[in-house]
Image 1: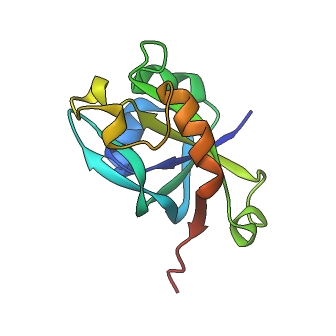
Image 2: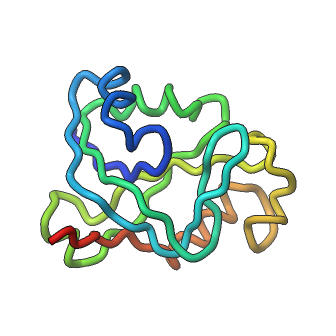
Length: 139
């Protein structure tokens, strides 16, 4: 099954993606509204204004999960809604986004970045309805 992924760090680079994935294609530039990029050991997204990235299609989401350290808890793969105008051009209403746990990335306290209480995954799930991925018009 083909997955759509919003990438915002090293995976926006064609050479990096080609060295990792056998099958992929960049769909286009996009903005994730409601999250901003912060840099620790590796980049991640936290609540904020917006971040620009690219949409990547691949049939090897498991390889991306391994690369992002999902099993070790470094990153969590979550689904973010696409703006209706973008969803109409692709085969899915959401895109996967990898979010890193702040403490695991050397960024400090969870409370410093994510509102609410509870574990990282619970805070993320409560916040995600406030986010959306929008196309960037390059014409």
